[in-house]
Length: 88
Image 1 (cartoon, rainbow, N blue to C red):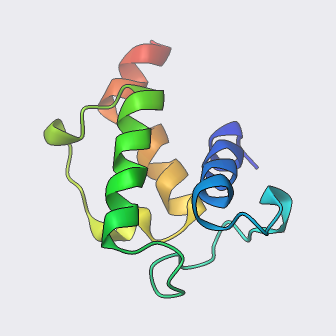
Image 2 (tube, rainbow, N blue to C red):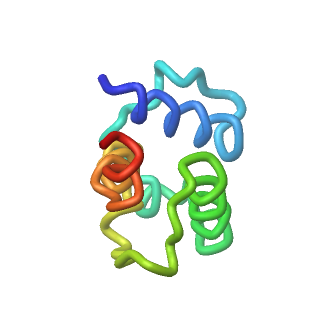
C-alpha cells in the first residue's frame, strides 16, 4: 500500500470515521455510496488535497469517480500534473 493511500485513509478516518482505525478502512470501500463522505465532506477532502499536496484543483478534472474510495483519491493525487512536477 502506498504512502498516499495510507495518508488518505488516515485523513478519512480522522475526519469522518473517528471510531475506525485507519488500517481497518478498506482502501476500496466506496465512501460515497456508503455515506461516509457527502457533498460537504467531498469539499473537505478537496480542500485537504489542495493544502497537503499543493494541487490546484481548479486546473485538473474533478471526476466524482476520483473520490469514491481511498485508493481512488490516492490515484488522483499521484496522477496529478502538480505531483509529477514535484517529483521531477
